[in-house]
Image (cartoon, rainbow, N blue to C red):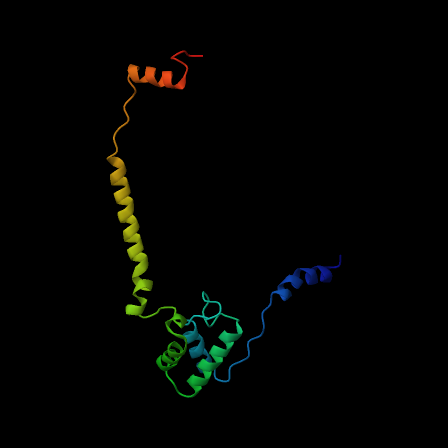
Length: 154
């Protein structure tokens, strides 16, 4: 095999996984601000991916909406308020602590405390069980009679 063919064969898999070229921003400062803000926002389609890293169509639309609002002179807080008003607290990676989100914030701790309490109660109850005593000769004879071997060992 010729060397150039070997190089081409090794390069081919990398070309297959190459991503799309991102368009250059008209305003690099605005683009950096948009990326920084969208890293703190959740993609509504992917759910476990930031808005900045998502390739979903809705994420692209939301990034464009963020850009437009920033061009209009809105602050980051105003943009986040707009998105939470429109999509709810789910769009935030760190939702605020309020009565609606108490279960989200404190539920895992309550579950942990309840589990530890349940485990403690189980171990405590289990430790109070009576200790098994060996059978007396009379009890062994009765068991043998009930089993039908009359004490004979076969």
